[in-house]
Image (cartoon, rainbow, N blue to C red; front, side, top):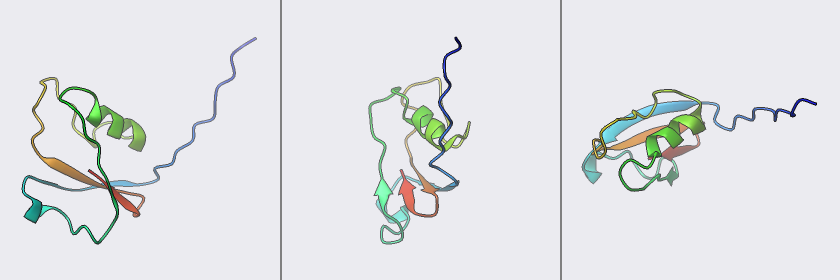
Length: 84
């Protein structure tokens, strides 16, 4: 008997890159959308998680060298909240 495959459920309908920023004054307006932050140590798969959640291969750039990303990337999800 073949194993049952679970149906693919996609919660993220749209994901749009907003901007990258270093300084808080360059961040998007915090009043515009609620924010969810993805934080963790270097080389733990934060970008891979974002790409998997959004079902996009290169929305968040994955680097082979740990510690390369030194910017906060802001991504608008479903026109409802910001993932950073």
